[in-house]
Length: 293
Image 1: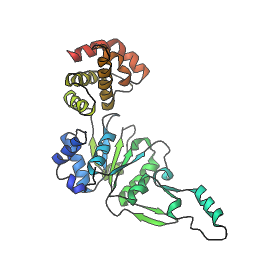
Image 2: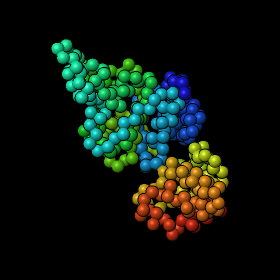
Image 3: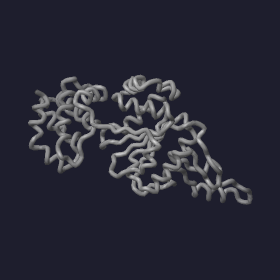
Image 4: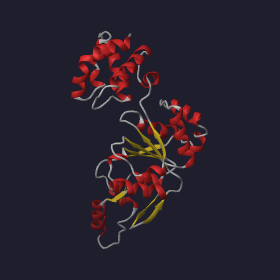
């Protein structure tokens, strides 16, 4: 997809929603408005919600709409500056010194610099969208580092000096809210909480993203998944799993498994936890039959 300016895409929340739908992502009015405001105000967008509601997919769709590369920084416990900003390729530096012999060599040349996601975006802010995924998995020290980066969009490399973004980068942060984020980080962002869609919208998403799934099948899956999520599961199924379940059940049905047997046999693509499977198994037949009624 050709690169578009953010201003061209974000002319209104309705235009944003329309563009996202063309990229196979259905955003409701509140989410489209949050994306619109984040782009127009030049602020990071913080998306929170349960796992599987479509936070990461939203970032992918935004990058697709803008025709930009998605640069993803996956957070985890213990992540540090070397994984997020940059590091030097020490092996290549040593080899260069050996090969240079008596000649001088600049071991801090670009060819020895390994750019991690934050530096990649600073170097090409108009060609990329930065996704800081699951920021709540990182520790407070990394959160402070990220806040400093978001404040000035620059980093200092002692051997090279300060590198600044030539344009305002588009940044999206996601959080599953496994811990509270710092108020300073929240204040820096446009905030939106993403919930699971209602059954009607989820059926629309399934029909949009699944392969050859009939409308009746999509609606049955959406109804059954809503019922399943209402139960105390360790890992409630996300939207992606609902799409996979619809696809898998359709494949089984075309192969000879009748409804609702096809749904029961394909349950492993929807529920991916042993205890959850054991919990839901006795009621699965009734849930599916009610959804198909």
